[in-house]
Image (cartoon, rainbow, N blue to C red):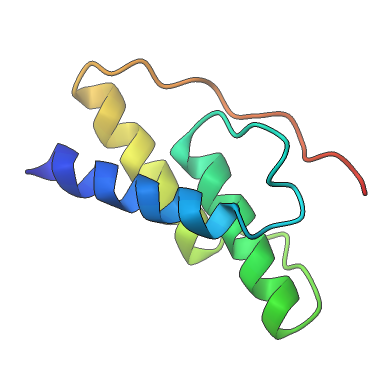
Length: 84
């Protein structure tokens, strides 16, 4: 059940991340997808980017941790996003 919820959340993150300006650069894990989703939401609502961990990034970290505990291969964090 935990894995199913994690997978559903990851798909949701992917959908939100697709709206970001950096959607063309590949994300490597749920944490990175969550970070991109947080950034896209921040830029859309406030026009600024908060460099701290947002709620989607934290949820992505939990998903990655749960997947590692389940024996899934989770890539390391991605490099910083490309500048526009």
